[in-house]
Image (cartoon, rainbow, N blue to C red; front, top):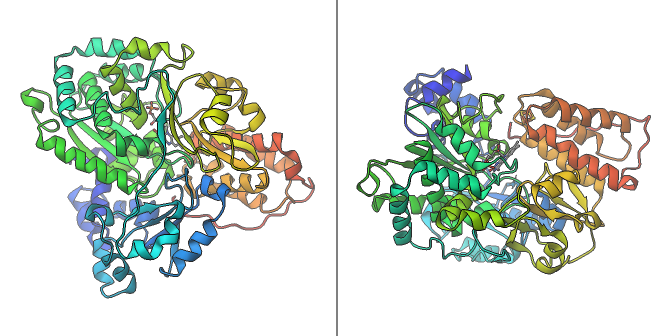
Length: 578
Ligand SMILES: Cc1cc2nc3c(=O)[nH]c(=O)nc-3n(C[C@H](O)[C@H](O)[C@H](O)COP(=O)(O)O)c2cc1C
Ligand code: SF4
């Protein structure tokens, strides 16, 4: 069934999800389904999956991501928003983890605004005097912005300021000089068009670049796998669904280094033989959506995207697809389903996307940082890149430090950098006593500070110690923040974001959150649940959750005082997203 939807949706150019978002009115469902030759239930089925496509969306949202939760103060932000908005929703996370107190304002979609003509809510946004591209998809705020809400609502926009600095021995990701202007982009494209794909691929292989989206898969091997497929249609997808609370490096790259990102996609397309690409950007990042759309338009006008690039036979059409509030869309098969307009459920692999991906055609899916690094390697030197790191984890890495560091912000460091240097010298230590740091998002480990300081920043250093580097986001857990509450927060996160395909995750995440409502839970039952999640989940959302929970149980057992014979289960709500 889902295969049929993929094949039918693939007969039209573009993304069915984008069409569903544009026609966000139940009345147009039948018409849209028949245009795609799909059954009438397909469109409502898809729409019901996504938080942002549900009816009666609030116009204000408070960030409930892990970094904002640990920093505290979100209830105050919510109460301030409630003075202006009748309803305040929740979003996790807005990528403002460096100064917290994050919130998001978005107007109703145009169709709905028409229905609500004259409503007080519509009036609030009609006053916003900001970029009209942004008002249609929302705006993010953080730090002291909430104290200026009156000014924001009367049209005074606030700058988003944060530190982005390179401490790497050679900067590949932050410094601008590798490709700062459209002119230099154009020169790089000319250089690319003259280059032999095989040579480009072997340079990438010798750089040792591994995917930065979490799994660390060698990029050149992925591209080779797709290049080897003898198919006329192939796709390049940039995974810009950066949903891990604590991570904001992809957002930085999209907003500050968009040309490098797009060049990375062109490089991949040239090597694998693709003429079509998609950048899937989460809807919680309106500024990124706006920047990338703007740059694509500019590059199309300069004949640097589209048909016959710079008069050559190379074509590359690039489109943005905006995510609709589902964390699982970061998982590559769910992301593909989402672009196709299916419910974003994870698919069984194999076949891997390089063999059968978007619309069942060979597809490369890469993270934003991976593509930017590939572009920088093309412009720089693959051997210089390889010489940084420990030989297996090579090059440089962006790390995101949250608002509980004295120097919060985004930093580029060498792979294999010492964590003591990162925490004490670069991060400047903590603003208050911290007992542990969760590295690599909700599916990463919770590492006690004293253990963390002995590690090095590379895939091997983390996995040998039983943790995960992931996307290298650092979320601090204060000493006075209960480990039980933190564990419950993680279960609730997975319960909210589960795609619902397999029962250990769909049901187990809800049962785990219920169990940890207080410390009167059955420890044996919890262990069984964690084992079931780890062994029985189809993807790393359910399968990865036990790592952090087990770390909390192992390192902070006193905070889980339990009576094993008592099973005290209180019902908790299972949120949206699935
Ligand atoms: C639950 C889940 C969420 C994920 N979220 C992201 C994400 O937000 N961004 C990302 O690049 N990869 C994410 N991934 C990994 C992707 O599935 C995929 O491995 C990655 O995009 C491949 O790109 P890379 O080779 O450049 O790392 C996620 C995986 C899982 C299981
Ligand atoms: S583990 Fe969770 S998110 Fe992953 S496939 Fe199963 S239900 Fe979906």
